[in-house]
Image: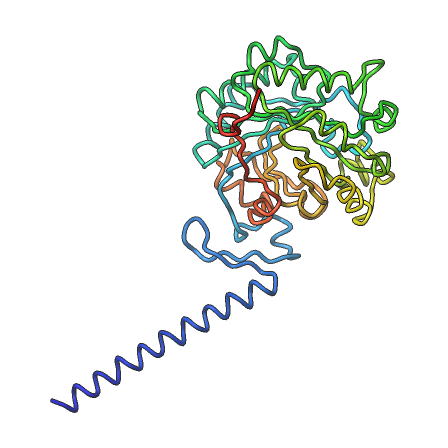
Length: 359
């Protein structure tokens, strides 16, 4: 009886030791994998998914790559624009725009998949149907889908006060693109139309945002034309909630290479030039910098067909449309890096009700 008990105790002790050793080596393996740059973590379905860099499967959009919840989605519903910015990386390659009911169906699918924030962009989103198409999508997302945050990126040239009067209540953030506070520089870049002043439009929209309680944001692309500029005084005067500062990015087929509508090589700056610009503006508290690496794989981008665009290889490789295969399947081919999304500050206080702004 005593011998049997001793044997049982020894067996239990051996099992316990084996379990601890197994846990130790499993933890060690995960650490080694993390350090080597290959990320291993549970997928949404509880399986182990591995993301391999530089493989054929990843380039083609393998179903084994990591997927994630589409908490923040950028929907470029139109490619048409009235400006001709020389570095534009989402150019007017088509004139297609989904029927509004199909666009709403896709947005509903995204909401059901976990979307909390949608950002409408283009092209110029206020161009199609003079902003009414955009306005109805904004209203739908806020009023019917009850999204915490709805935002828009615009060049500001086609916005009317009547739009704010009709749709301002449903919009959390309006970002206006402005690359320089020198009108000649804006024109040289292509950010302008005729004799209209881009800077006048910027200030006009900023005032409307204040009047109609919409959080105001500025986006700037840093390039060879503005890299030496000091915008500190002007940005502080405009007082946006965020100043997104992007490094000029080349995308094959969009602004570089064959079949592209732009030739942006002359706008490209080095990492050091970009860092020097950031250092010059380090006193601007609302500055949010984004290098090329952060931009390539930390955004969930939907094109005009509601296809996710994978930009990791320096081009835009589309998934199938979420309208055809659903969000869970399409997002596998998005190339989205949720870790980089969080590192670059993609998750922030993005509902105007939570910003506690003094209008």
